[in-house]
Amino acid sequence: MKLGLTKDEVKLVPYDDKWKNGFLRVKREIIKHTNLDSVCIQHVGSTAIVAIMAKPILDMVVGVGDINHDNNKIIISGLKKAGFLRLAVEKPSEIVFAKFADDTYQVKTHFIHLVDFEKELWNNLIFFRDYLNSNEAVRSEYYNLKVDYVQNNTSGIAEYTDHKEEFVKRIYSERLKLEF
Image (cartoon, one colour):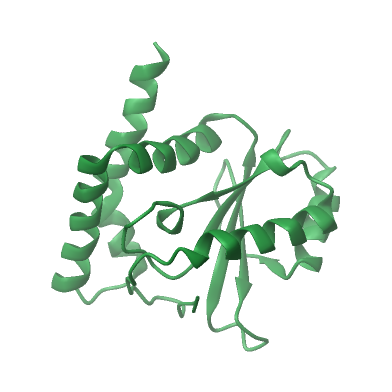
């Protein structure tokens, strides 16, 4: 299992069933250094969706009671001990961390999205993963969307994310429909 992308690189690789074990190893390391409950650390993103091409970076969502609470300093310190560094990404409902391949900090291998546990972003990320894993037609649509971008574009990660945004929002809206 080879993980990693440089700063603005967009590359898709075939699904690798070793991604799950890679996630579980990192999850154990996070639990060891943070004492977070296992249920608060979930594998999300395309590497958590079976049989789909993905960027070779493991995405995780880590849920806490309130991301703005001072107690998170302990969790942030624990994440650092587990090899994660906080990124200068400013988002109102999450704190983003990355793990790098080595001390040059050029190749990211893992992301953590620290969010409020069982609130909107947490629920959306978990739902997206589960919905695509249980729905072959939607998973195929997402696969084709991603592959189309890589085959027809040479721009970076921001454009790749924008290309997928409408699809992702549509899936998030499916969660809202099911809640009512």
